[in-house]
Image (cartoon, rainbow, N blue to C red; front, side, top):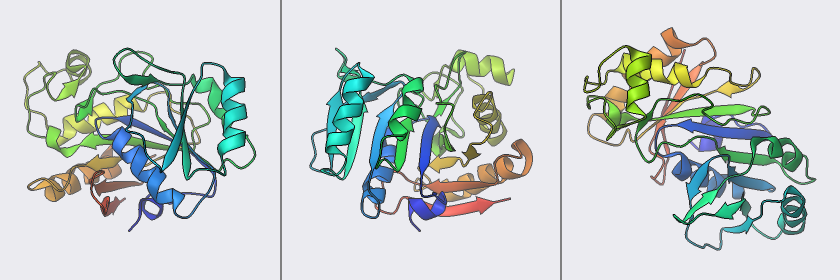
Length: 253
C-alpha cells in the first residue's frame, strides 16, 4: 500500500506533520511518492529542518520575502518533481521555515496541488510534549499527521527519548524517569491536538514498526488511539518512514 492510499489523500491537500522524530523523512517520502503521479508539490516547514543533500528530485529556494517565493514557485513548479522552500539557512545548517500565514497564499498559486509541511520539532526524539505555541500548524491544514516513534515504548521518560520531557512529566502527572507506556504516549498525542484546525482529518503515523516486536507494540498503541483517545482519530497508519515500503498496516476504529 502506498502512503497516498494509506492516508486517503485528496486531489488537493495541505498536510502538516507534528510530533516525534521521523517527520522530515516522512515528508520527503511523501514528496517522492506523490511526484510519480502528481504535479504541483511544495515541501516546507513552519519550524526548522535539516538542510537536505542536493538532489535532482527537487529544487530549493530560500527567501524571507513571500513575494519572491511566490514568483519563484510560479516559474519553477513545472520544471521540477517537487519544490522545497524556506526562509534562510541558519548557522547550525538547518533551514528556517516559513510563517504559517504564508500557507494559504502559496497554496493558491496556480498549479499547486499539495503542500507537505513539517510543523513541529522534536530534535530527533521518538516522542514529544508540546510547549505553549506548539505545534506550529497552519490553520488551513486539511490533513494532520501526528508522529510517534514506537521505540519510545518501554523507555524512561527523560530527554534522551522525549523532547521536552519536563513538560511531558507535567502533562502526564508522572515523574521523569517513569517507564513510558502506551497510555502515556496516547495522552501526549492528545495534548498535541489542542487547538488544531477544526476541519483537518487526523491520521497518526506510528514509525519504526520494523524494530523487534514493533508491529505488536504498534497495533496495541493504535487500538488505544482509535478506540479511546479522540473521536477525530478514525485510523492509524503503522510503518517505517525510511523503508522502501513505508506503510506496514492500517488500524481502524
